[in-house]
Amino acid sequence: QVQLVESGGGSVQAGGSLRLSCAASGSTFYIYCMGWFRQAPGKEREAVATLSTGGSWTSYADSVKGRFTISQDNAKKTLYLQMGGLKPEDSAMYYCAAGGPWNHCRASIDAADFRYWGQGTQVTVSS
Image (cartoon, rainbow, N blue to C red; front, side, top):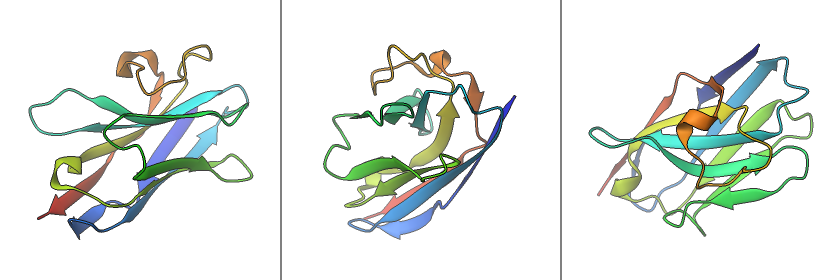
């Protein structure tokens, strides 16, 4: 069993920055793929970035490359998403996910392929 809790969301103006955090607990020893997803009203949940906890490989959606950075702390208990150059189209509920397939830990992954989810944290970017 794995529990995930997100924090760090809020309201910012376009061009601003936010750092989202995801605290993981439980049986995380064999979790090798984690990621951040977002979902705006009326839209499907989409992958933003993924991280392979074993090899530290990262992957990003084209829409956020160069602006967002996914990372993990040294103890591998917290996942981060550093967001810069925020745009109004980045506004969404952001979710932390864990338990994705080890052989396809990429930003093209489907949300249904992740086993564990956090409750979400809201990000609102105004123009």
